[in-house]
Image 1 (cartoon, rainbow, N blue to C red):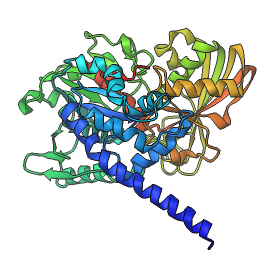
Image 2: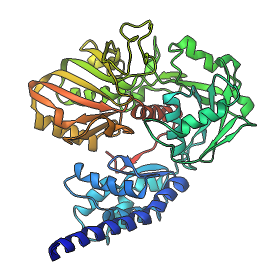
Image 3: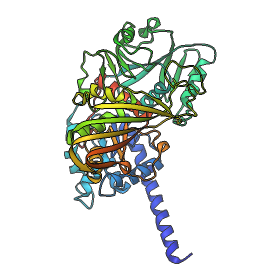
Image 4: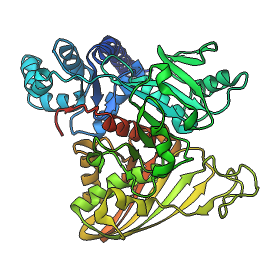
Length: 484
């Protein structure tokens, strides 16, 4: 090996070690900001709270996809350290955005404190505080367990939603241990990051210090939440058993419950909410709300962005969806067409109401979209292919540039992510927190027609949207700085 090769090797190794040291320094600060002040630190929309040292470094590496400037740890570290000295109210702070703004016109940290005082003045001057609000999960399947993971991850003195109980059927010997095991180990999403203790005597799980009562019941009428000290709770129904106001209204008859959120498309007059698009329509008086479907959440924000700029005349949405629990593993009777055939062996053509459901959140697209779905033999992560006819002409580069900017700095930045990787495949999107990720490499655009490919983790990404809806229903609102 030549002297040049050795010097290059030493240079990269030294840089990596310096990054590790810096990440190790800021990691406890990130934790204290969140637990003590309720301040969640983001880097271009991606949370740094509870991130490992390696994940902090990797997230900084990805920042080059969001800005013309490469944002390094030695540029965000002084910002994070300064944040710890400020009297901040609960909020979200994107240090990636702040770093891009500051270092574009500064070469040292001399003006950093003044810059942050100006950029964060509203948070500093605010006396915002939110009283703790109780949450109950009714059902503990795929979505219920992921909601548990997210709520436990977010728990802290500055976060008001408290997961107090989970309602399930059963109660036989060993049931609690099995449910704890399902939360602890997941074939798709991996091991739970933390500690789970089982209290057999009290029928409870203690998850990262969060005491969660397990309530066994065969229906809402059997539950009295108040006997567990639970009051004015939001009940999140993720069973899918009831989807209309009459059925879901049973939860409101339980002592200690005040609101219901459905993790499926609602029927009748129930508001179907896609957070980021029509969440502002949730009113204090709304006692039953739907978080719509995973596919509706995946496509509606991108369709809104496209419609706002180019106008959508008509379109077709084809969903390539991972199989779900309502399909058969092997060929057997099923009431639905084709769904009786083995989900693990077949592509199954089926219907979806997601395209039509878009108009419930985005009325301007009423009657403009059709849709179909193909269930495929993958356990998680799906894709929507949107074939659109536009009012305004565009091309691939212009369209991708617009969508990339929307994903970075718009009111939809928490709903739309963007990738231009030529190698990304479905498993790379497991755990994606955005409900939809636009695949820029696959975009087709010419004249008044475009085809967009939108990836989505139909479990985790959707669960993140559900939590946003929970916060909205319970009056939990955090400003993000700098303002988008």
